[in-house]
Length: 355
Image 1 (cartoon, rainbow, N blue to C red):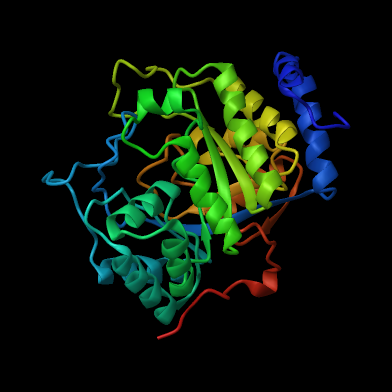
Image 2 (image 1 turned 90 degrees about the vertical axis):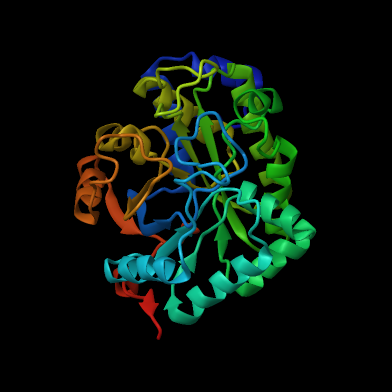
């Protein structure tokens, strides 16, 4: 385990190490930050309120262009019904996420958050940086104004979606109409400044170079040095889907490549306390193995997901199944909230229907 912050040259060397050596380095960092044998997990519901999006990402099978007959915007009652169902099934967090809708202004999001908070006691870990940037532009506001208003309306934290690879050469190739690196970082910077915790992500395997992956890790590490506002980072491989444009690989990264990238992220991002294993994209078996490659968190029991899921068993894992995989890996399972604070068993049920 390195006893200092590694640089890019050392990262290249570490990535080329044997898999056991790379695993050992990442586990050393994990136990330095979390000396116990606890692995956390969450129970949350993803609510994809709209698939209408004007970003047109080449890798996305979920979005529909404005005006497309398959485009939708859920009604308020449909959204609230999904949340009520989630709470009844044990969820403590709600992840509201959709596309970059060209017409929805800040008032829509404020009204939705207020209605959720009036009716339920639940954490809203919602709206990605691209969505927030988009609604800010549509509403003619500054980021400070829009994020401040979302926070006042009930937003508790912001997920790290939409990062992919934070290198504009990559972004201009795979998603030229999506927000750029500086814009993604600025959304999170402003959120941290306003007191909101956020998470970070890395999706690799778009045909980017290793140096571009390091650019991504550098930018996350630098912003965390500046603000300390990231609660966790999640690394996962690009998922092939219905969309298979010629500019993208038709084969997703191997499980070994995933384990190597996750382990490297744990060592390189030495200022991140939590690293989540992405069983949702790589499957339960590889997700369990990832707990020995630096992860101290096993992700979530997902009650609904329409955007990310990639592995065949990705939506079939109950709480009991996820707990059993954590225990099979030699750890004790403990539930957490959306910003990775551990929840004692006595706190189960704190999410509730209020009216």
